[in-house]
Length: 492
Image 1 (cartoon, rainbow, N blue to C red):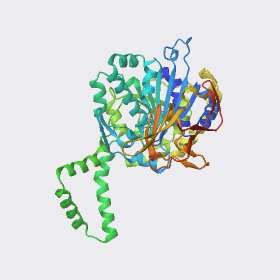
Image 2 (cartoon, rainbow, N blue to C red):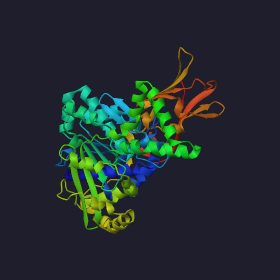
Image 3 (cartoon, rainbow, N blue to C red):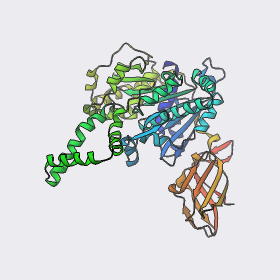
Image 4 (spheres, rainbow, N blue to C red):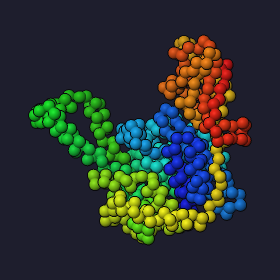
């Protein structure tokens, strides 16, 4: 990955800053850290149906570069990772099956990817541009699913076009601490369709002590222990006899039709089938300021070692602090800027390294911060002041109301880049100045160029206009000012 070290740094920054609440904050942070990336433009978007936040960055091509990759425009798509809130935690835990033609996915991660404007990404690739997906934790898993989805969409459109894109390394996916997303059928689908480039496409950076990606086999532990723990708890609460309860439960299970038994079994066993190793895994190990390495393992050549690495252990939970993106950022920025990363290494990962504590890690990482500051400029990255990606600023051209045959009323919004409109800012304005918020649940369709909203239960007498808030004030397609602005579009 030496060839792509600048891309890793760019992905690290976007994966980190897409946790921010608006475009302005993201741009400010990118400008504050300008020596660790060469991103020039950025914009924040959201898939309202799932709440998935994503950030798109851009770097213009350098026609004078000797590097073919840099002679192409590059777009970065980073998906936000796990917040410690109810929605994101339940997404991580929602491992029930989502079966698709290409294989079975982690349902929580898959649902997060639905509604993403993949046609725009496909168009960039067909134009000869680079696209790099990235993300931390949940965001990395969503990015992997999006990458697979786009590859398979390109396959359906044109096999020769896809081969050209893959041979030119136009599409990459670089993730940090991301869990496995599906079963072996996914990799089989890629291989069966002659897509042998996954080692070059998918790059997952995982800290040696990060427990979150190591979920292989957890389903078996759950099946062996959770039922027993649950039964013991119920008996203790209600003073019931355990053996009697077990017999009653077995009788009930056997009385279910075969389809119901099969359904229950599939739900309890799917998480143990999260074993699809895709691409190359870069195992990060930082021991102290003078002793660290990144060991690269591919699913093709190192499957035995990778399977052992990903096996779940209850002891792993003790190392949860290693999952923080800050840990990855501090280590990788240091390693990449000091050019200590190697594509392969003779170092071996041993279980003795897992005795490292979170406190010791924080202490050793603190030692390298001063070194990072003094060596940033040695990377030779061209620095630019980051600005809003004007080409993707949302523009509403028209708003109209359509009466359906079943007496439903639909509001049709036509425009450009509508996925970048914050839905919670949409309001209906009446002639008397009264305002009504548009609820997310009323949105029937949100495409790239059209949005459809059900307003059947909304009074339309005196309805004048639609209002939305933009994080950026724009006068035309070429000018954007970093100011919060309110726009109002008359309803036709």
